[in-house]
Amino acid sequence: MKNKLIKIGTIFFGLLVFFGLWGISVNASAVNNYIASHKINHVSITKKVWGGFPHSKYRHGKGKPEGVVVHETGNTSSTIFDEIAYMKKNYRNAFVHSFVDDEHIINIANTDYLCWGVGYPGNARFLQFEQVEMHTKKNFAEEVENAAYYTAYLLKEYQLKPNDACYDGKGTVWSHGSVAKYLGGSDHTDPVGYYKKCGKKYFHQSYTMKQFYKLVVTNYHNL
Ligand SMILES: [Zn+2]
Image (cartoon, rainbow, N blue to C red; front, side):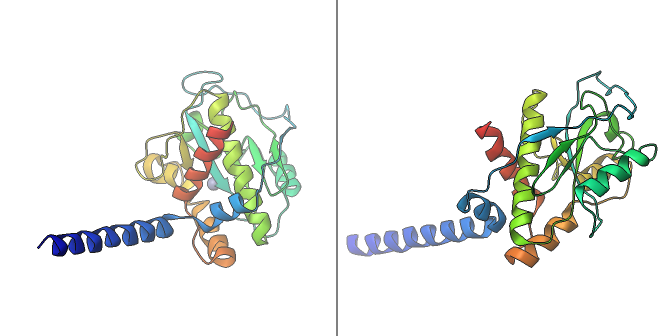
């Protein structure tokens, strides 16, 4: 009887370990693992603030944003410099605070004032940056690390705590898609499609906002 109980116990323990490991492997992000195992480090922030953008206060005042919105340009062939030049020319329609690619984090608009990237009411609440589309596995991983670092940096800079807003519409880390879903202002879904596409193409697994959020938290704790 005792032996039988020990045997059942052993099997039960074995199953726990098996499903525990299986759960970890299912939840693990191939992109985040690649960044960690290849010791990919973020670049430093370049400030090239242009005086031409309008200065309007956030709803809680100057220097009081409530979170960060992550965008992706949706342009398959532009460079970061093309995007910045285009935005300065067309800022009356839309502009964001910063741009990120594999080699740059470029801040172009004063983050103490709001920008126009997600419409009403999100513009009056959030810091916003765009990611430019990358075309290799390594460049995508480098860009994602830069984006996660920059998100963490902005949170810390404005005394905001990391909190994933993408699944419940409450928090400090947003995709443009989650702003559109929970607050309105547009019908955009970025950067979800871009993350999914590059994740599948280069890592055989979709990259998700949930996985990106984990990378933000890792960066936040390293600041
Ligand atoms: Zn967007």
